[in-house]
Image (cartoon, rainbow, N blue to C red; front, side):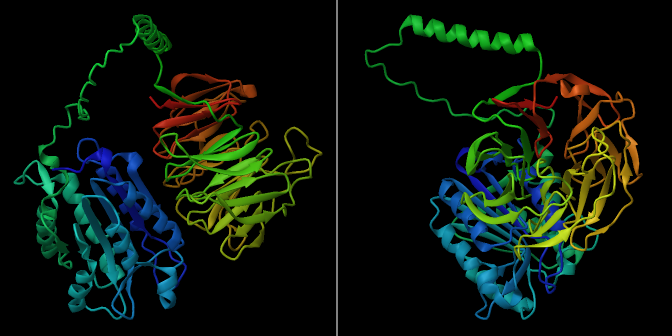
Length: 577
């Protein structure tokens, strides 16, 4: 049987970039995490509630990963699923260590995630089933005949372990491949299914098929170990036997009606409830638009999403809230009188809040300040506030306007030069940065937006990597965004193809401008002149929906399925049609 989605949790851990030169990058790991999450949360194939899935990508320190693992382990009652992809190292006593971004091969005990710690966390979980999948290699001293000993130490009572043990990074991640070798086989199996298998693919059957495929492709054979009947637990539905044309309806147990104890609901209250419900339905029918959700507790001036699904709202006063994709508040940071700009790291673990004279960086899970970036920007006068704020992909760098800050060393790298351009509204006034955003794939590249142009820079060397994209004085900016694949750029109110270095969507009015770009690159939000109204459109300017009015900021969710519309007194979530 499949795990109970309402009582199960998953933690997907992966490291594609490493600070140590001894650990080469594994770019396919990032895609491993995204595609595995997509399969497990697919209503037709999987079983996992997206709200119960934590993705820890390129996490720097052990403590952050441990907390995510511990919280999910304690919350799971039916099944706890843990996945890791990246470099694996073996310590002096043959213990297994899982590599993180800051892992130093000479200091594994303090810089890598020890599997002993994972095993202890699993042992304390109330989950009935524990599934561990490890896609990592044992480099250096480890040879193939040691793999059995390492597998032996993985065993946890009530746990099923599926381990891939390729001898080196090349076998683990073939050059140019979308996925690492082992996870690629697993995703191929789950996505295509097996014609001769039952409707549910059990862990035992999956292992058999993976071994068969590995032998055919000349890859190391995956190894498994389980206790009890753990091999009979299903990981997914068999795609061959899934009817994709039929609607997928979640099966919710029918609650047992409570016994009547002599006290009944007054008929007047019941009638009032029915009328209120009917009125709400009528309002939605009359609106005849997309599905809406409201987060009325937080009004503000801006909103920023991270690929993790977490987002931060720049409130006008008080603590800055960080929310998960379901709209639940997971942290309140600081107590700023007014945040001019906010940012959140790709993994959702760090957030930055820009105030009048400094930028504070917070650990979201601990709600604790971890760094302060002093005011060092030189492209504006004291009356103007920070407008450019962004973390790079692995959260080792932060840009505040044109100043780049090294978060690991807690010191500035330097200031990016700013072109001598005139302010559209004040030609004789001081020039300033309008926005900044790091590239979604390359952790060293960022886009810096100033008046009339945007340019890509190497943030570590402070050197340009492209010619300026010039927009002319008819457009204003303040919203720099990349598509997730880095091929599209929204800047200075225009949409650009970086591959062709040309503007897209030429049909907008002279004073209309693009203020949001969906991560999948399929949608944009265009705001009309004077910022009175906005509308959804395709990159080719094809308009899709009704107008959105009375807003301070708009942002797409990480999965491009929702729009967060921030107003002064509320945040409205609109389903993308």
